[in-house]
Image 1 (cartoon, rainbow, N blue to C red):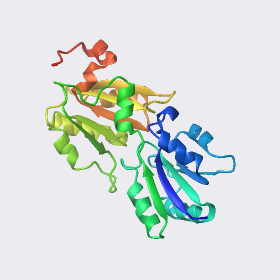
Image 2 (image 1 turned 60 degrees about the vertical axis):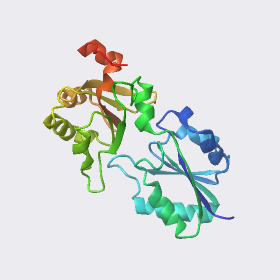
Image 3 (image 1 turned 90 degrees about the vertical axis):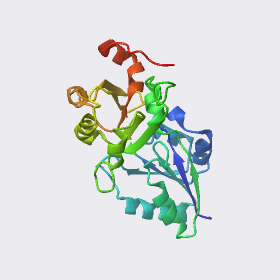
Image 4 (image 1 turned 30 degrees about the vertical axis):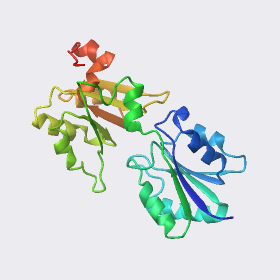
Length: 251
């Protein structure tokens, strides 16, 4: 058996949002190593004799370290042949895919990466929140709320001064700090949406403004995994309009 490793983006949660190319890779897999954020329904596309290995990885709740996953991925490819690494969202968007690919390549293993639908776009879209809207937001930023140093990225200060839509992944634990930063730049009235388990049957969300969003999240007991969307585009959501009133949107 010639070892091969394919990194596949599983999409944001809804099993129907994986790509056709991703499904074809699963159908050819000899072993699948899947994350907690990858919908287990996708394993039905694998062959009957395909081995499934859960490798966890949720925020601050990892069943294996990244180094252990790297080593297991290599060992699985040599033992079984075609190893598919199934990762939530898109593997490249804060998914540490490059680390896994670089490690595999040091062993001379053939590698491939298959893009997935990223939660940074799909999750707000599923709730009717566009990340861009003509006359309202001409660009959007995507950033992690949890760097290697377990801090907010320095770019958050630049983002807070922008008129762009800001999408933050893995940032719920630092929501109060995020709100303080945006408020310090005069953004206390800026609309915010927090969406938990986006695109899944157990999706939950809250909508508010920078000044009150942390209190609402506590009240509703919103948990990880969640996506934070900050910007005027949130104001088009029907729940925002019901609570805060309609705003004039430029076209």
